[in-house]
Amino acid sequence: MTAAPSLMASSSPYCVKIDTLLSSSSSEFNPISVASSFRASRFRRCLSKNLISCRPSAKLKLNFFDSSKGRGFLQIRNGRFGIHYNSSKIFTQTLVARADANQTEDEEPVEVNQDHTNVRELLQQQKSSQLAKRVIFGIGIGVSTGGIVLAGGWVFSVALAAAVFAGSREYFELVRSHGIASGMTPPPRYVSRVCSVICGLLPLFTLYKGQIDVSVTSAAFIVAMALLLQRGNPRFSQLSSTMFGLFYCGYLPSFWVKLRCRLTAPALNSGVGATWPILLGGQAHWTVGLVATLISISSVIAADTFAFAGGKAFGRTPLTSISPKKTWEGALAGLTGCIATCVLLSKILSWPTSTLGAIGFGFLNFFGSLFGDLLESMIKRDAGVKDSGSLIPGHGGILDRVDSYVFTGALAYAFVRNLLPLYGV
Image 1 (cartoon, one colour):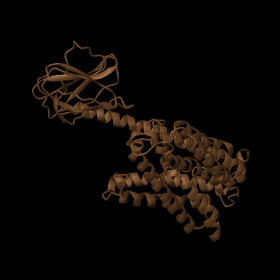
Image 2 (cartoon, one colour; image 1 turned 120 degrees about the vertical axis):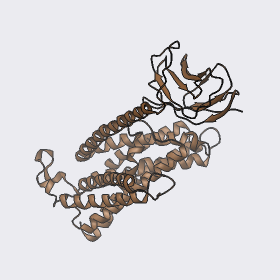
Image 3 (cartoon, helix red, strand yellow; image 1 turned 30 degrees about the horizontal axis):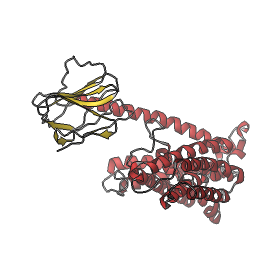
Image 4 (tube, rainbow, N blue to C red; image 1 turned 90 degrees about the vertical axis):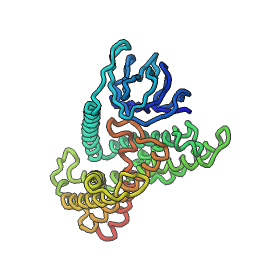
């Protein structure tokens, strides 16, 4: 019989998970690799347990203990992770661990109390550190985004183009991941890189040309030709995943440029615009596009915040199997927060002038953010990953932060451009 204990590592200081073993060997060292598994014929049974490891070190040794006082330890030899054990049997039901980055092999291991108090303290410290990191970077991202939206023009478009390029790179890495690629043929790397560059250029084309229909069509044709003329056997899965990436990562985000930079009619009723410094553009700076963008982004933030808080406090009914942590109660709280934010900001900024228009704007922003979030969750689930990347500490990748905004920009632009004029702005 064989067993396959796994070892996983992350950016967290406490990052090792490994299975407990039942062994009849007297002494053995079995090397294993990070994020992989190994098999050893001497193991007859495997029970899943968690061990907590300290920061990586060339001399790291992780001791673990069983109820019969037999012991073993996780060790690094010549840069290789491995399990060294010297107990005839390891039956442990409750596993406790201590990691010391500077412990040498001749030192006696120190057993941790069996009540897991120290382990719980370490986990609590880890959670507090992660929360602090999320808050700090979240505030930084929020302040930076606010300044970029207020600046508009090339500043807004270039920043969006950079985010789009990074997000498209993450998308194609997800497509190439084992979970998705096992059921399809991913596009060649040179095609995904070219497509990422095209996606990054689309916001700039939108600012310069106003309309990107011809640009997107031309880009799709070029990418399709590159796929069809590649060496080997072209597959439809390559074409479909690439075309969707062009649409999802490039075309849809470009509507934010249309919303912010192309709706240049002044929001004459805005009280904030009346007091805006002349050196910063005066009242003319506060256009319908600026006000609509600020309200849309703020309402999406409110939707995410209220949905999280409502789900934590009242969540009972799962919303969908795509994202098991989302609940109907949290979604209702998010919808309420999104609409309330839209109505409140519409009163402050005097746009839109009708409460009904503000409520409709809130509905669209919420459903755009919800389904954008669910779509990215579906992609990550099929890819078998928790985060789309690790670019933003404490938050994951770009797609993890902007998934709620992918569809929202297009819906908000269509609402302002086509629906509100029917009832008056």
